[in-house]
Length: 169
Image (tube, rainbow, N blue to C red; front, side):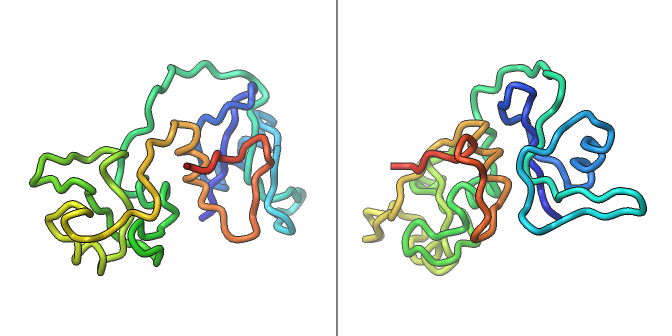
């Protein structure tokens, strides 16, 4: 099922919701469609509207300040776009750069997406000890970046430039 990004009335990312919930918010006139999936439409007996990719609430919602994005295995895979940090192939596992047995924890800066083969080859060692090199260093996404990454855009799908992520250096 497609995920839709919800923006506050001030255009700040709030969360992602299911397509069904997004359509309900638009139909109840609580939100407007800011970006839609090209060529896709939702049809009902008396209604036809574009499939929303990004919606914006009509009224501002006050939200407690979130300083950090919560770490999760799924979040690491999404952050690294399911690409192995060691070889660039499809990643299905999460690897600890500094192994947990050596004091490494479950943090954004200590975990990377890895293919099962490279994760097994690295085993209980650091990349230097295993003779492996990280293609991209791990980074901690902001809460807004984590929401945008969670949208899982397919090839050819883009967000407006005012919503794009900075590429990690």
